[in-house]
Amino acid sequence: MQLAAINIYPIKSCAGISLASSRVMCTGLEWDRHWMLVRDDGRFVTQRELPMLATIVPRIVPPSLVLSAPGEQPLSIPLSAAGGARSVTVWRDRVGGIDCGDAVAAWLSAVTRESLRLVAFDPALPRASNPVFTGAVTAFTEFSDGYAILLLSETSLEDLNGRLPGQPLEMAQFRPNLVLSDASAYAEDKFSELRIGAVTLRVVKPCTRCKITTIDQRSGIQHGDEPLRTLRGYRYDRQLNGVTFGQNAIVLNGVGQELKVGMAVHTC
Image (tube, helix red, strand yellow):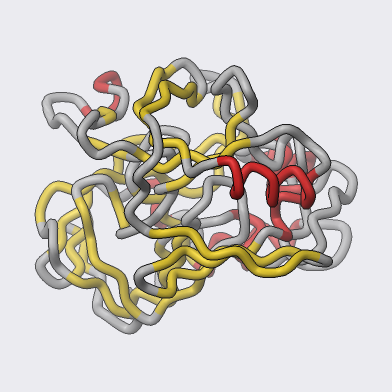
């Protein structure tokens, strides 16, 4: 197998960035889900409530995070947030955040017509993944739904597209971090650990899918109930009470190492 694509999503539920290489942190790929949008009460906001978040495009241009959106001037934010500490919520987790300020909040309000604030993850307050799935390994993440890295294979998407009644879907609709080539369809379901160069990942939990997979990641518009309807026909997991597509992984070894597109991927 090979590493066919590397993607990060600097702001949770906003547009992703395709990279030729990325540094591995204990929490996943560098800058992945490092920022998040929250309401005034600190509760996280995603495309589930606001599909148009897909049209907010972040870029990492050191020393800044640059945001773009249709109809608005780009906005630059320091990569090193220096605002006030703020406790925020991701699902059931209370997580430490750093507020990115009123100017950013005003820009977001102009784009979304909602009262939203941007927070950066506070590395001084590590967030552990669910030990029910990580077992004896204490694994960390930032503002992801729960785990460091999401894996998906090209052939799994090809198989799904062959079952869909309409137009084939792009990989971006499933928002994986690492895309694998030269694997059999759903091979990722059977993986225990993967070695990519000096990096070792452990596969810990199937990824249950939600309505974000029905949202066009270019336009921010939801289209019907596919692929969820088709996935439910052959990928429903009773134990997790949802349809699964892709696998969540944690970082075992290789923090600080770089992953590059084209690297060989080995099971171990």
